[in-house]
Figure (tube, each protein chain N blue to C red):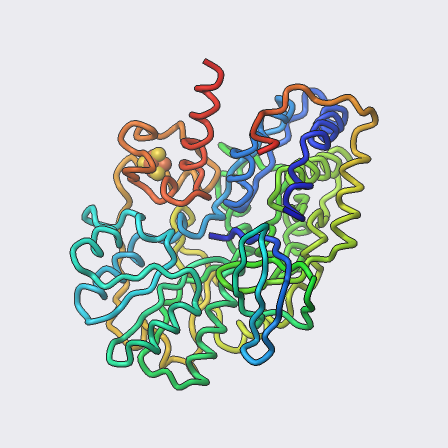
Length: 86
Length: 377
Ligand code: SF4
């Protein structure tokens, strides 16, 4: 119900205030009524047919960098469940 | 897929696992409540609990909108469909939720009720435009994430003067519910539940921002980390909570900064504020009446309020006997504590709402817990 997905904006239709977005190979039309100044190639979070927010690409990189710094060694945890790579 | 796959990376999960193991203090218990069903789902789907040291426990909270809606509100729409010639539009998640007298929207549809599953409020508006001679009611449920789309629909209907469209509004508010949990006797008296920190919701917070949590981090002296919904987000956030607990801090931190800001989505907030206002009190399954925890449609838009347009009395209905959903939603019990779990109650034949939605704790235990057991035997 609260799940939302990151999607890439591939086209914008100003007249209807909608965008065509792509999640992987799947394309969808979503309303832009809740967001401002979205551009083609932006990533947005989509939920029940609406773009909720723009994804800040710099912050995303920063978070990933934090993950990478987390472990002090590079040894892999071996007990990870298989679902992790799903 | 970008912004999904990187946050499920196995190698990084290994690193985070090691950091967490290094930082936890032996002998100290870390009880971390995830408010959101989206986190519950991620924790089970990716086996995140299994990656945590023994003394770090996830406690599942009430953040599943399907699970917390009291049965009486579903009885309301069932009555409405039976008594009036309406088309009821609903998100798919609501179809199988058990109502009183072993009824559900799915069963009502099978009996000829005109119930249409919609993906978006835009679809509900389209159905109203296409059927001008019929009353079309949208069954609106959900937290702050799902509320703005409902507000947009009401504004659109108003602008188009769509006379046959109305909304049965059941939108609820996250901060009020978290506060209610912290004030519940189970938590206050450190009886059955102890909570040391909270994972703040991902997508709810993308709308409301991190600001609303600052009050109760301070008031209740509990750390809050706003966490993304991917497994690595949950692990990193657990690490941040553990660090706060170890150093005796209780701040609001934001792991999900790629989407959440302190002030949130102001455009969405102002749309909601224009169309809706606080209810004095609203019933939550598991939490009872919670003051100022839900929204209703403002008087200026009451033409679009199904509760004004139709006779929708307050119905107090009781849950199926021995269904433990109410205790589970407060974090006081686990699904496996329920006698009906997995025997009488399964996703194919749910007895309670927690078994219906994929964000419900019972459904998550059933779907992923059982799967893991089979792998081990
Ligand atoms: S297993 Fe079924 S009956 Fe038991 S608490 Fe969960 S939903 Fe209710």
